[in-house]
Image (cartoon, rainbow, N blue to C red):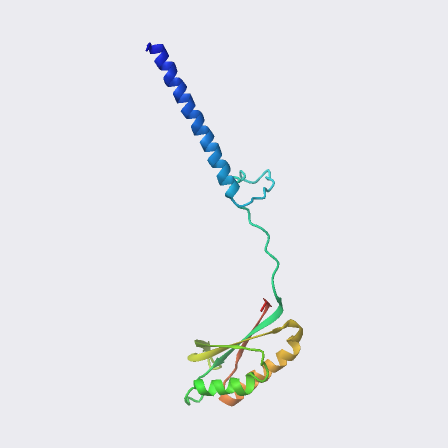
Length: 176
């Protein structure tokens, strides 16, 4: 085979291979784009850096919140006594919850044990075993529930000789 024909044949094969490679690349790119998440383009600003490639997902607006408006109240109960007497026991605390909290919030509650720390009225750092009581109630019942919670705080401080019971309220959305 003359050399000129050999070069043309090799060149033709090279072009065919190059065309096949280009088509394959295009098809693979199309498949990757088709399986990528949808992207909403954002208009570029004059002062903004160059736009991100189209394959980078753009943050979507948050979904509608499920549930109803509720209030979450956390109460923090210490167990140490200022007079140095033995701390409130698990059994005593459980009895307090059963007798005083559950009748006011029969729909449900959560109790978690923890280790607390606070500065007392005399400036000393106190460390003690503690309990967190978590209550959820509809926002529409915030007033009556708030009064019941204050009754619980007052009863615990009186019954167990505590300086205070900490309270934290947070708006939440609840769906059962």
